[in-house]
Structures are given as C-alpha cells and as structure tokens.
Length: 228
Length: 291
Figure 1 (spheres, rainbow over the protein chains, first blue to last red):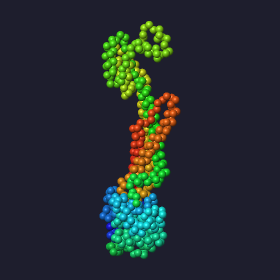
Figure 2 (figure 1 turned 180 degrees about the horizontal axis):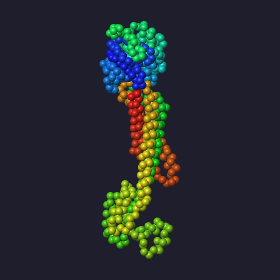
Figure 3 (figure 1 turned 90 degrees about the horizontal axis):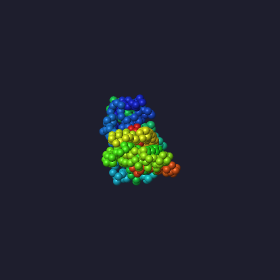
Figure 4 (figure 1 turned 30 degrees about the vertical axis):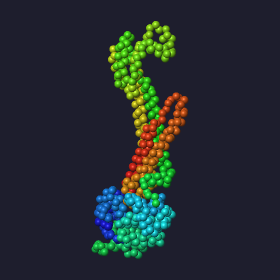
C-alpha cells in the first residue's frame, strides 16, 4: 500500500527532512512512526499525503507515484486516504454531521447516500447521538472521534493519524487508540505518528523509529532488512 | 442535515463574519465611489465642452453682387460637405439688423448709415464629431476655394484652445481614472485576501480530504461576486447622494448637471463584480498554491 524506496527530502530552505529512507507497509498493517520532533515523521506523512514531492527516490501510495502526480490526481489520491490530526481540524461553524458529510461532499458523492454514510461513520466512532452538536460543545476525545469519522466516511484504504492522541488525556487516548485498532481490524492500513512510547510498547504493532531523517529502527524487518 | 453548496457556503460567510463582509463591501463601495465621482466629473466636463463646441462655426463672407443663383447653388454644395451639419445664408440686410440688435454699443453708429458696410455670409455649423481645429480649417480652406468668397473666419485660436482643453481632459481623465481603478483593485484584492486567510484552515482541510481546487474556489468566487455587486450598488448610492447635494448647491449657477445613465450604472456594477471575482480568483489561487 505504501512504499518508500531510497527516499530523501530536502526542503527549499536547506533543511533535510529525510535521508535515504526505505520501507514498505503492506495491506492491513498497523504501523507506528516514532521519533523526536524533527526526526522525519511529518516529512513521511506529508509525502504520503502528496503535500510534498521527494527530492530523491520513489514514493508510492495506493498505486500512485507521488513524484509524478499531477494537480488533478492529488485530490483522487487523498480521497483514498483518511487523515486525522493532533488538532482535530474540524470546521467550527459546522455541526458534527456536517463535518463528516463535508468529506463526502467534496468528492461529489451522491446526495441521497450522504446521510446514511455519515450516520454509519458516527455510529462506528460512538457519536451518533451528537450528530447535531458543534465541535466546541464536545470534549477533545469526542472531537478527535469526529475527525476519525470524517476520515472513515470515504472508506479509505489507508488512515494517516498524525499525533492523534497528542492533545488528549489518558482515558480519551485509550478510547481513540482502541477505535484505530478496530478500524485496522477491518483491513485498513493505519499509520500513526506518535510520541506516546507507552502506547507503542503495550501493543506490539510494527514500529518505525526515525532520528535525524533516517530510520534507526524498524520492528517490521530483521537485521538483514528482510520483512518479518 | 443541510448540504454544502457553493452558494450556501458563500451566503453563510456573510452570516458568520458580518463585520468583515461589511468591511469588504464598504471597501469595494468606497473604491468604486472614488472612480464613480471622478467619472461623474468627467461626464459633466465633457458635456460642458460639447456645449462649448456647439459654437464652433465657420463663416464665409460673400463678395458684394454675387448672383442669387450662385449663392443657392453654393449653399447646396456646402451642405453636401461631410463635416457640415447646417448651412445658413445671411444676407447683408440681415447682417446689419443682427448687428444693430446684438451690438448695442454700436447702435448709434449703425443707425445713421447710408450704405450697409456689412457683407453677406454663409454660416456653416459642423457636425459634433468635426468640431475641432483640423476639420474647421479644412472646411474653411474649401470655402476659400469658392471665387465669390471674400474671407473666411472660424475663430481659429478659440477652436485650437478648445482642442487643447479636450486633449488635456482626456489625458488627465485616463491617467487619474486608471490610477483610481488600480488603487480600487489593490484595496479590493487585499480585502478579499483577508477573508481567504481567515478561512485558511478550512481551505487546508478541504484540500486534505480531497477537494478539487475548483470545489474550493466556488464559494469564494460567489462571495467575491456578491461583494462586488453590493459594493457597486453602494458606490452608485453614494455617488447619487453626493450628486444630489452638489446639484442643489450648483443650481444657483444655472449649470445643468447630469448623473449616470442606466448603462453607466450597469457598468459600475459589472466592474465591481469583475474586480470582486478577479480579486477572489487571484487571492484563492495564490493561497491554494501555498497550502
């Protein structure tokens, strides 16, 4: 689903984001991206989202070659991805259901199918009863669930979660993480960037650790570099 | 659940941010108001110049004793000139009685005359588009070609001065008009950019969930167009209030002032809409490249 092959990324201001990074994430896997700020996690996510293009090497996501994507193809790729951010990024003037519906409307989904699909996604994250509420009326954990429902509503192949529990207390963190695990159990690839090492240790999912733009540890490959 | 449509989103923006929307409309309105006021001055100045230009006239004095048939034939020939609107033959008697009537200070001198010293003449009025020095001179030259014409006058200095005034007004008008329009476009562009920046977060979310640039632009374009129309109407209203107040003051001078016609008002609204739309296209486009 995701393949990085000798990828380097240097930004226009000279900052090096990634240096010769290679890994593959097959269908159905749950992967943690860990590392300190500036280690390269965000660079990997922004390449997956096609916000950036690699300086060197090849990035392929869900069959798309990122370096060769045209402006027209970028929205198509992003519709196959679900994205969740630390700061939720909800539209504050829209209700919960409108926030979720928004992800369908931008893709040109048929109007009559939208309410059902929205309700299904909200039920999945346990927020069907708060469909008419506005984001500011919800707790942080609930807002993140809305963001996850928005990411899910398009039935994505891959869910990208950038520090999704960074702004949440422990209880909400567990709830959101459990939700991500359930989504993964349904076959969706989940790539989660996190600082929360406790969460990483407890679960035993594949972990890719980055430092200074390089992969320093990948629990998904053995010492010779072969996939486990 | 209310569905998101570009029109609904554009209208909602006015509800969510009434102050910023009001400021945008006011800035478009005031910018167009300055252009409108300038246009009003220009229109009225042109009208005044056109009234002055109506006095442009070529007078050909006819030799004494010229036969009537020759004069009738010449009158027809002169009327056939492309520049000529109207030709009037004034015989010597009419010239004298007119002089007595109009030149009151020489009334006594004209009364005691035994012989009429004034010649007959052709008074030739030109069509509006030919009331300038070049065409007046061309007509004068042709009139001089008639053997019975003794002299031709057309107030050369005056016509040339009128020409200079007209050219100067056109040049000053074009420069100031363009400057005002440029300032208006910059102000409107900045205003719209502020609204785009205010919604930067929303735009970035749209992009990340897979919205096409066209989908993102839609509400902004409609919003820009609505603001442009509203700003244009506001500008016309402000111009009208200013015009009415000024007209009341100027009525003592006897000047007849004119306001915009329907077409000109439509042009102001169309111009407002165009810069509202243009400002949106540029601001959103620039922003989309940076998100």
